[in-house]
Length: 287
Image 1 (cartoon, rainbow, N blue to C red):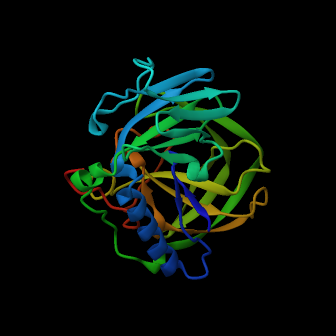
Image 2: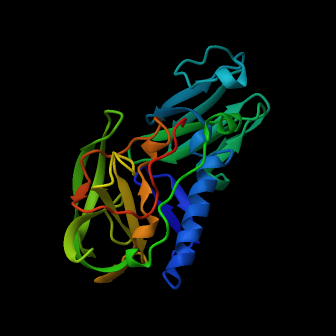
């Protein structure tokens, strides 16, 4: 099972072998819907905290589950604590066995109150996600997609940068981040070829196993998310081919279309001056 690595770095599993692009599209829609609607999905996020090394975040013991939010102060001895120290993300508290979430399955742990904590590790910080499955029923209104179009399966030429270039970006929550420009893709779309920068979160070619493209187009702010959409294709780590197949039917919205808790790059997109009626459409109202 490959992983759809979103621009906001939430991994969504789906099979992407290109043997049958229509099945890729079916798998993409199913996986994205599951990630949105699941108990630890996009619409179940109750709070997020960014924890620096040697720091901690706490969940007060006295609060109702629906009211819980991360806080930098312990408050009381019964609080649940997540400490980021010595390369470990230790979750401890009443009713919990001390667990390093970086070694836990899916890097997450269910809490006795029905909530779940999951972590994402970055070079200089740890992001702690707090999920409440009850929120999904309140928020999730379904996802929308353009109809499948076989013309959206295109082959592009990839020119690799042997030394990836760090590109600083300002994201949608006014945080700075870094993506690595790993090359360029010449992509034929509707009779013309457009050159797009290809990105990855990794800077070491031994670990790079996909290219990630960021688009806006003439559907943006109309029938697709205005902030941008992402497209990717995978290959064996470190072995990027010069010819790559992309399935535009698997274009997906920046995750900020679904939740304000995500950090989306806002200055890495390439505008393609055509209507890309492929992939995920603008999110339904009432998100």
